[in-house]
Length: 404
Ligand code: AAO
Image 1 (cartoon, helix red, strand yellow):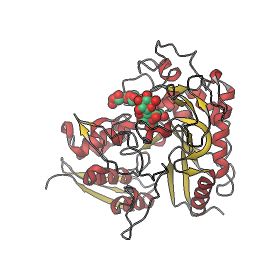
Image 2 (cartoon, helix red, strand yellow):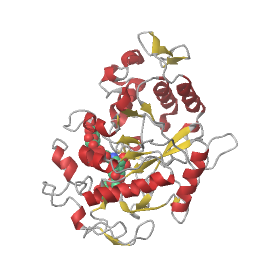
Image 3 (cartoon, protein in one colour):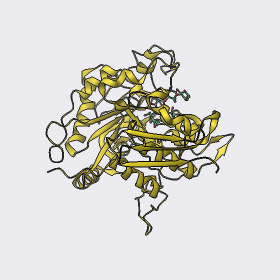
Image 4 (spheres, rainbow, N blue to C red):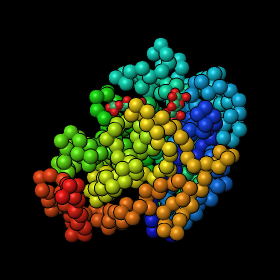
């Protein structure tokens, strides 16, 4: 019998990636695949299998960040500077460990002079050209779709429960559907027969571009980036915003329908100025306001919620820009990622922030599970930043973000 579901966890891309030494091992090297071997700074395939098995056995589900839009950057060079030592040549588009070759990339299809995405107002560029120089896979080809599906099915066999589809905006929705249709049902050692993988697609839609989150509803959920940007603005009390205005939070704020939304206060990009959302995004660095935002998110029925869990890095601002936005996870001298140690007071060591263990956040996860399915009810506000609401007859919560 499957264990009772205890928790869900999204993990960093587990497949082999390029090793970047300038800057020294940035976190973002993991978004530059070299092969689909499970072999990264976090460990090898045996270690990944052990983690998934141990988690599943206690009801903790694992979701994989699937980077399948592209391989490494076009300037990645050639050699074996990859986390498993697989040879590749970015210049000739050769990735023999998959294998992919020149035919499997969109170089001929992209219509911009530079081969890069130059204008987000042109949906063809956004899907057919390179995102930040990353070699764009030709997902219209059945061969490429099959390689991607084989990678994902390998993970399903191991026991993962679903996927974040990285850079989904940069793939045609029909191409994503084509590789998702090739996926197996989840492993019946832990899931009931016929269970499909849970899919959420990273589509940054803050408005003003032709590609919208709704284009992707047919494939699963989509990330709702407006959520964290707006909630941060309200909790910071910027632009005259106040919590009283949260009364119609959700679709009333122009968000995608609740049953299509994957929501979060911050993510691994916008907590350090990458991706989208801007300065309003709240993070662990603003701990008091952050806890209020995450508490509000977890109390409110809108969307499928995701809590961030981070590592600390030496933030250093020059002209308002964090010049250390690239710094990778706490690591050992051989480059491997340091373990998450647990201190006597249940916080994490080794510079892991572990927001998910913060008392207020952990307790609000319990709240969310208790009130699951209960209606949003009995809203109250003081016309300013004191608000309260119920969830049926199971829960009630009060926020005070006024200075009194
Ligand atoms: C690294 C280097 C690059 C180098 C490249 C190749 O930093 O200089 O060219 O290697 O050698 C991560 C890092 C990247 C890193 C990459 C590969 O963030 O810095 O590049 O790994 O190592 C777009 C995409 C979205 C993407 C986001 C970062 O649409 O998919 O950029 N996120 C995912 C991952 C992310 C990862 C990748 C994808 C790649 O979560 O970690 O990159 O696998 C607009 C567009 C957005 C666009 C942003 C940023 O946003 O709408 O779609 O996101 O621009 O380019 C306002 C607007 C808003 C706009 C925003 C920012 O808020 O309203 O729409 O401004 O301009």
